[in-house]
Amino acid sequence: MAIEKVLIANNTSIIQDEVLAHRLGLVPIRVDPRLFDYLSENDQPNEKNTIVFKLHVQCKRGSPRITVKSDALKWLPNGSELVKETRNAASDSSSKPETYTYFGCSQETIPEFVKNPIIPKYPDIIIAKLGPGQEIELEAHAAKGIGKTHAKWSPVATAWYRMLPEVVLLEDIEDDLAEELKSKCPVNVFDIEDLGKGRRRATVARPRACTLCRECIRGDDWEKRVALHRVKDHFIFTIESTGALPPEVLFTEAVKILEDECERVIMELS
Ligand code: SF4
Picture 1 (cartoon, rainbow, N blue to C red):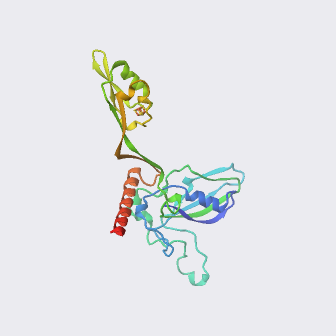
Picture 2: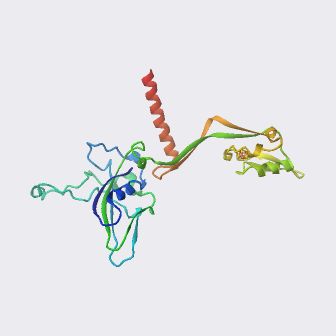
Picture 3: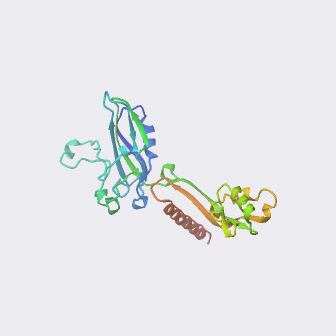
């Protein structure tokens, strides 16, 4: 989920409306997007496809400048509070004023949000700075989307993979050679075990940490003592989440999407 629509009621800060809206769009929200539906052009924004935040900050005249951070975004579980301008005010005077969302119930009553209110994932993201007499009042509507449409919907900050490294000692490496091998490795892949009677032997203690930098096989005869390989069918993924979902969930969800796409290709080909 990411902020997609910003309704600005007042902005007297030096940051332009569109820049402010763009900054708000990039604030990660602590909520599981799987609990929401996509909002298409023809859909009404409701409690199942929209999250509404309010931001109202003011720097009083005579006060020092203030920094507006993401924790100033307040979740409105009952939807928009901004009243729409209606053409026929007389006919609407008896009914509830129309706002920009159509919530059937409060999002606070949804069990998943009872103990986990929706908030920005990080409270200290700087949104704007206000000088004395300046004010921002707006409503931000978050919707569900995919990273292909805009990076703000990507739940992943950084992701990469590498093949599992394999470090094999081709012979027993003992005593001073064991110490030398241990000191060669910049990421401490090797350890020394005590064989008793003052004898020591090198072991491969942390092969996953190996970056395959080849330092350990540089120098005389070391290639005959240590072999380095990549396991070609074992991948180590490193995924940094923006905070909405934990990395392990992101990985399994990505694999499900890949599975669906493979099935589609197979169906098209068969
Ligand atoms: S290749 Fe580099 S990181 Fe891997 S074990 Fe050798 S020295 Fe360590």
